Image (cartoon, rainbow, N blue to C red):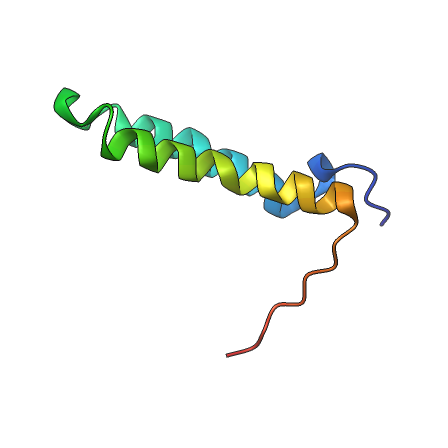
Length: 67
């Protein structure tokens, strides 16, 4: 199967689902944490699909180490 876009990647699709779940979870955080941990967690979550898309656009072939 040819991958035409990062949107075809299952890992990108699942990471987008993760972002939705993270945003849902952080709505339950205390309002005092809005500009602290909530902001950090949501920004970190959003960076995952963004980095996958950027890596795909560059044509990166990341090799995962086996532990």
